[in-house]
Length: 263
Image 1 (spheres, one colour):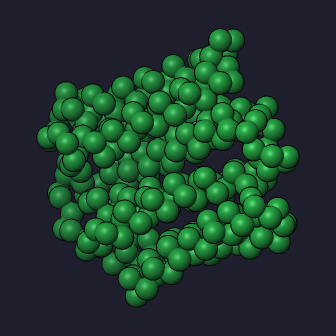
Image 2 (cartoon, helix red, strand yellow; image 1 turned 120 degrees about the vertical axis):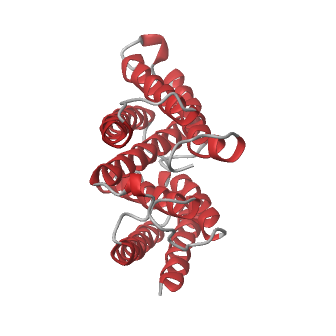
Image 3 (spheres, rainbow, N blue to C red; image 1 turned 90 degrees about the vertical axis):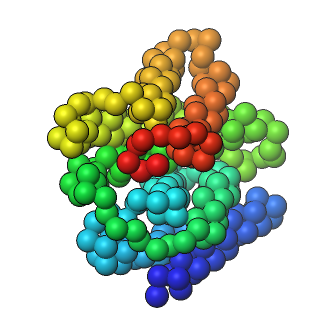
Protein backbone atom coordinates (compact mmCIF):
# COMPACT_ATOMS: atom_id res chain seq x y z
CA UNK A 1 0.00 0.00 0.00
CA UNK A 2 2.83 2.42 0.90
CA UNK A 3 4.52 1.76 -2.43
CA UNK A 4 1.30 2.37 -4.36
CA UNK A 5 0.61 5.63 -2.52
CA UNK A 6 4.17 6.83 -3.07
CA UNK A 7 4.03 6.15 -6.81
CA UNK A 8 0.57 7.69 -7.13
CA UNK A 9 1.68 10.81 -5.24
CA UNK A 10 4.76 11.20 -7.42
CA UNK A 11 2.62 10.73 -10.56
CA UNK A 12 0.22 13.44 -9.36
CA UNK A 13 3.06 15.92 -8.80
CA UNK A 14 4.59 15.02 -12.16
CA UNK A 15 1.24 15.58 -13.85
CA UNK A 16 0.87 18.94 -12.11
CA UNK A 17 4.34 20.04 -13.26
CA UNK A 18 3.53 19.07 -16.86
CA UNK A 19 0.23 20.94 -16.71
CA UNK A 20 1.91 24.01 -15.21
CA UNK A 21 4.38 23.83 -18.10
CA UNK A 22 1.51 23.63 -20.59
CA UNK A 23 -0.18 26.56 -18.85
CA UNK A 24 3.02 28.60 -19.16
CA UNK A 25 3.11 27.89 -22.89
CA UNK A 26 -0.60 28.13 -23.76
CA UNK A 27 -1.94 30.30 -20.93
CA UNK A 28 -5.25 28.50 -20.55
CA UNK A 29 -6.88 28.91 -17.15
CA UNK A 30 -8.26 25.36 -17.15
CA UNK A 31 -4.70 24.00 -17.38
CA UNK A 32 -3.75 25.92 -14.23
CA UNK A 33 -6.86 24.64 -12.43
CA UNK A 34 -6.08 21.04 -13.36
CA UNK A 35 -2.45 21.48 -12.30
CA UNK A 36 -3.51 22.94 -8.95
CA UNK A 37 -6.01 20.10 -8.44
CA UNK A 38 -3.24 17.55 -9.03
CA UNK A 39 -1.06 19.27 -6.43
CA UNK A 40 -3.87 18.74 -3.94
CA UNK A 41 -4.18 15.10 -5.02
CA UNK A 42 -0.46 14.54 -4.55
CA UNK A 43 -0.48 16.27 -1.17
CA UNK A 44 -3.44 14.23 0.08
CA UNK A 45 -1.79 10.99 -1.06
CA UNK A 46 1.48 12.00 0.61
CA UNK A 47 -0.39 12.92 3.80
CA UNK A 48 -2.18 9.58 3.81
CA UNK A 49 1.11 7.73 3.32
CA UNK A 50 2.76 9.76 6.10
CA UNK A 51 -0.17 9.07 8.46
CA UNK A 52 -0.03 5.32 7.73
CA UNK A 53 3.73 5.15 8.29
CA UNK A 54 3.40 7.19 11.50
CA UNK A 55 0.65 4.86 12.77
CA UNK A 56 2.63 1.72 11.91
CA UNK A 57 5.87 3.00 13.45
CA UNK A 58 4.31 4.62 16.51
CA UNK A 59 6.43 7.74 16.01
CA UNK A 60 7.04 10.35 13.32
CA UNK A 61 9.03 8.24 10.83
CA UNK A 62 11.69 10.77 9.84
CA UNK A 63 14.87 8.94 10.86
CA UNK A 64 16.65 8.13 7.57
CA UNK A 65 17.34 9.77 4.21
CA UNK A 66 14.20 8.43 2.50
CA UNK A 67 11.99 9.65 5.32
CA UNK A 68 13.57 13.11 5.56
CA UNK A 69 13.38 13.65 1.80
CA UNK A 70 9.76 12.50 1.81
CA UNK A 71 8.87 14.77 4.73
CA UNK A 72 10.75 17.68 3.12
CA UNK A 73 8.73 17.14 -0.07
CA UNK A 74 5.48 16.97 1.92
CA UNK A 75 6.39 20.16 3.80
CA UNK A 76 7.23 21.99 0.56
CA UNK A 77 3.91 20.96 -0.99
CA UNK A 78 2.07 22.23 2.12
CA UNK A 79 4.01 25.51 1.97
CA UNK A 80 3.25 25.96 -1.72
CA UNK A 81 -0.46 25.32 -1.13
CA UNK A 82 -0.46 27.98 1.59
CA UNK A 83 0.98 30.58 -0.79
CA UNK A 84 -1.17 29.49 -3.74
CA UNK A 85 -4.44 29.55 -1.77
CA UNK A 86 -3.62 32.89 -0.16
CA UNK A 87 -1.98 34.77 -3.05
CA UNK A 88 -2.76 32.88 -6.30
CA UNK A 89 0.84 32.78 -7.56
CA UNK A 90 -0.22 30.80 -10.67
CA UNK A 91 2.67 29.89 -12.99
CA UNK A 92 5.14 30.25 -10.11
CA UNK A 93 3.90 26.79 -9.13
CA UNK A 94 5.90 25.22 -11.97
CA UNK A 95 9.28 26.00 -10.40
CA UNK A 96 8.14 24.86 -6.94
CA UNK A 97 6.75 21.60 -8.28
CA UNK A 98 9.96 20.88 -10.17
CA UNK A 99 11.89 21.33 -6.92
CA UNK A 100 9.37 19.11 -5.15
CA UNK A 101 9.76 16.43 -7.82
CA UNK A 102 13.52 16.40 -7.25
CA UNK A 103 13.04 15.81 -3.53
CA UNK A 104 10.33 13.18 -4.00
CA UNK A 105 12.15 11.46 -6.88
CA UNK A 106 15.38 11.25 -4.89
CA UNK A 107 13.40 9.78 -1.98
CA UNK A 108 11.97 7.04 -4.21
CA UNK A 109 15.49 5.82 -4.97
CA UNK A 110 16.04 5.06 -1.27
CA UNK A 111 14.62 2.26 0.87
CA UNK A 112 11.30 3.22 2.50
CA UNK A 113 11.84 0.79 5.40
CA UNK A 114 11.27 2.33 8.84
CA UNK A 115 14.29 1.67 11.10
CA UNK A 116 13.97 1.03 14.86
CA UNK A 117 13.78 4.21 16.91
CA UNK A 118 16.96 5.19 18.74
CA UNK A 119 16.08 5.58 22.48
CA UNK A 120 17.32 9.19 22.54
CA UNK A 121 14.73 10.05 19.86
CA UNK A 122 11.80 8.54 21.75
CA UNK A 123 10.36 11.84 22.98
CA UNK A 124 7.71 14.32 21.78
CA UNK A 125 10.49 16.90 21.55
CA UNK A 126 11.96 14.87 18.69
CA UNK A 127 8.69 15.16 16.77
CA UNK A 128 8.53 18.92 17.37
CA UNK A 129 12.19 19.40 16.48
CA UNK A 130 11.85 17.50 13.19
CA UNK A 131 8.51 19.06 12.22
CA UNK A 132 9.71 22.62 12.86
CA UNK A 133 13.02 21.90 11.12
CA UNK A 134 11.59 20.66 7.84
CA UNK A 135 8.73 23.14 7.75
CA UNK A 136 11.37 25.83 8.17
CA UNK A 137 13.41 24.25 5.38
CA UNK A 138 10.29 24.21 3.19
CA UNK A 139 9.72 27.95 3.65
CA UNK A 140 13.40 28.57 2.87
CA UNK A 141 12.97 26.46 -0.28
CA UNK A 142 9.91 28.55 -1.15
CA UNK A 143 11.93 31.73 -0.61
CA UNK A 144 14.61 30.31 -2.93
CA UNK A 145 11.97 29.65 -5.60
CA UNK A 146 10.46 33.11 -5.21
CA UNK A 147 13.92 34.67 -5.34
CA UNK A 148 14.69 32.95 -8.64
CA UNK A 149 11.30 33.97 -10.04
CA UNK A 150 11.87 37.57 -8.93
CA UNK A 151 15.10 37.66 -10.93
CA UNK A 152 13.44 36.03 -13.96
CA UNK A 153 10.17 37.98 -13.91
CA UNK A 154 11.24 40.66 -16.39
CA UNK A 155 12.34 38.00 -18.87
CA UNK A 156 8.96 36.25 -19.02
CA UNK A 157 6.07 37.51 -21.13
CA UNK A 158 2.89 39.23 -20.00
CA UNK A 159 1.22 38.22 -16.78
CA UNK A 160 2.78 34.78 -16.57
CA UNK A 161 4.23 35.56 -13.12
CA UNK A 162 3.02 37.84 -10.31
CA UNK A 163 4.34 41.40 -10.23
CA UNK A 164 7.84 41.86 -8.84
CA UNK A 165 6.45 43.79 -5.86
CA UNK A 166 4.30 40.80 -4.90
CA UNK A 167 7.15 38.35 -5.45
CA UNK A 168 9.34 40.48 -3.21
CA UNK A 169 6.64 40.54 -0.51
CA UNK A 170 6.14 36.78 -0.69
CA UNK A 171 9.90 36.19 -0.58
CA UNK A 172 10.19 38.26 2.60
CA UNK A 173 7.19 36.48 4.14
CA UNK A 174 8.62 33.05 3.32
CA UNK A 175 11.95 33.97 4.92
CA UNK A 176 10.27 35.35 8.05
CA UNK A 177 7.96 32.35 8.54
CA UNK A 178 10.83 29.94 7.85
CA UNK A 179 13.00 31.77 10.38
CA UNK A 180 10.26 31.58 13.05
CA UNK A 181 9.81 27.84 12.49
CA UNK A 182 13.54 27.19 12.44
CA UNK A 183 13.90 29.14 15.69
CA UNK A 184 11.32 26.82 17.27
CA UNK A 185 13.34 23.90 15.83
CA UNK A 186 16.50 25.19 17.55
CA UNK A 187 14.69 25.76 20.86
CA UNK A 188 13.00 22.33 20.92
CA UNK A 189 16.27 20.69 19.85
CA UNK A 190 18.17 22.42 22.68
CA UNK A 191 15.65 21.30 25.30
CA UNK A 192 15.70 17.77 23.87
CA UNK A 193 19.52 17.71 23.99
CA UNK A 194 19.53 18.90 27.60
CA UNK A 195 17.05 16.24 28.71
CA UNK A 196 18.84 13.49 26.77
CA UNK A 197 22.51 14.38 27.31
CA UNK A 198 22.66 17.17 29.86
CA UNK A 199 23.68 20.08 27.62
CA UNK A 200 21.74 22.54 25.46
CA UNK A 201 24.18 22.78 22.57
CA UNK A 202 26.66 20.28 21.20
CA UNK A 203 29.63 21.48 19.19
CA UNK A 204 29.10 18.80 16.54
CA UNK A 205 29.33 19.95 12.95
CA UNK A 206 25.58 19.59 12.29
CA UNK A 207 24.76 21.76 15.30
CA UNK A 208 27.26 24.43 14.25
CA UNK A 209 25.96 24.60 10.68
CA UNK A 210 22.35 24.65 11.89
CA UNK A 211 23.25 27.66 14.01
CA UNK A 212 24.85 29.29 10.95
CA UNK A 213 21.61 28.73 9.01
CA UNK A 214 19.66 30.36 11.83
CA UNK A 215 22.11 33.26 11.98
CA UNK A 216 21.99 33.78 8.18
CA UNK A 217 18.20 34.00 8.09
CA UNK A 218 18.15 36.18 11.22
CA UNK A 219 20.31 38.56 9.22
CA UNK A 220 17.91 38.32 6.28
CA UNK A 221 14.99 39.30 8.51
CA UNK A 222 16.90 42.53 9.21
CA UNK A 223 18.22 42.95 5.65
CA UNK A 224 14.75 43.59 4.23
CA UNK A 225 14.81 46.95 6.05
CA UNK A 226 18.16 47.90 4.50
CA UNK A 227 17.59 49.66 1.19
CA UNK A 228 20.60 48.22 -0.67
CA UNK A 229 19.49 44.65 0.16
CA UNK A 230 15.89 45.06 -0.95
CA UNK A 231 14.60 43.51 -4.17
CA UNK A 232 17.40 41.93 -6.20
CA UNK A 233 19.82 41.75 -3.26
CA UNK A 234 17.22 39.97 -1.13
CA UNK A 235 16.47 37.52 -3.93
CA UNK A 236 20.17 36.68 -4.21
CA UNK A 237 20.39 36.19 -0.44
CA UNK A 238 17.41 33.80 -0.63
CA UNK A 239 19.21 31.71 -3.23
CA UNK A 240 22.47 31.69 -1.26
CA UNK A 241 20.62 30.86 1.96
CA UNK A 242 18.99 27.79 0.45
CA UNK A 243 22.42 26.60 -0.67
CA UNK A 244 23.44 26.82 2.99
CA UNK A 245 20.32 24.88 3.97
CA UNK A 246 21.05 22.09 1.46
CA UNK A 247 24.62 21.77 2.68
CA UNK A 248 23.46 21.57 6.30
CA UNK A 249 20.74 19.05 5.46
CA UNK A 250 22.48 16.83 2.87
CA UNK A 251 26.09 17.89 2.50
CA UNK A 252 27.17 17.22 6.07
CA UNK A 253 25.62 13.75 6.20
CA UNK A 254 26.96 12.72 2.77
CA UNK A 255 30.36 14.41 2.75
CA UNK A 256 31.37 14.83 6.39
CA UNK A 257 31.05 12.90 9.63
CA UNK A 258 28.80 14.06 12.45
CA UNK A 259 27.59 12.63 15.74
CA UNK A 260 24.14 14.18 15.29
CA UNK A 261 21.56 11.45 16.07
CA UNK A 262 19.94 11.73 12.62
CA UNK A 263 23.20 11.47 10.64
